[in-house]
Amino acid sequence: MNQPCTGCGILAPEGTRGCRAMFDELAIRQWYSPLAYPVRRMMVDTYALQHPDEFCASAKSLVAHLTGLCAAIEHREHPHLLRVLLEWLDSQPALVKPAFPAARGRVTIVSAYEASCVEEVHASADAWARSVWGAYAPLQPQARAWVAEALARPVR
Ligand SMILES: [Zn+2]
Image (cartoon, rainbow, N blue to C red; front, side):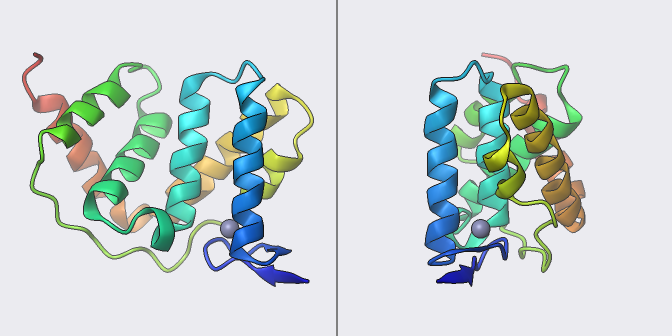
């Protein structure tokens, strides 16, 4: 029987478990397609932020996914930023975890899951990511501040 996912609200078999199964299947499918790493990473960050109780329990995981999505949407011209962010997170910066927003975005995994070609997956993933980033609007200034902090670190 279909039940709502506690993260994104879609109706799926067994609710949250069914939603997660779609995500896992999409991830496996991408393995065989030429989807670029940044798109796959963007979908992981998007899914995690839409299901934060499960994937953003620690401050570090929330910051990793939120800064990753910020990088995907606002810094596409900066391909090394994901690595810069990882190094910054590994340096154990002091992080205070903000509260999750009440809304999680209206677009869900369904459109990317149902996409029939790589181009469609890209377009769906993009709309999905922007929707979730929009839902996290109250946290965007903090996300940008974290990205700026990461970028301000001296290059090793
Ligand atoms: Zn869900």
